[in-house]
Length: 59
Image 1 (cartoon, rainbow, N blue to C red):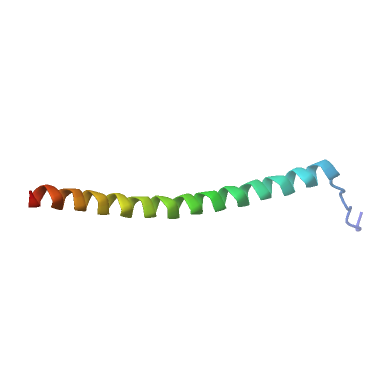
Image 2 (image 1 turned 135 degrees about the horizontal axis):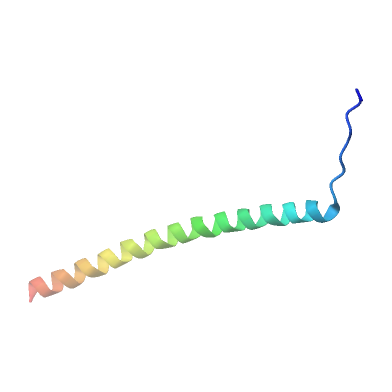
């Protein structure tokens, strides 16, 4: 009993873990890309609104 028993993990479980890690990694990348895209869209939207407002004010 002093020897440690080595448990073997089925290959299907290892594949599932790897796939799950890849999904998490991909999801994180997508969220970061969406965050950057949303920030750019927000800036563009603000600029458009400002130019429209200035156009109305100038008329």
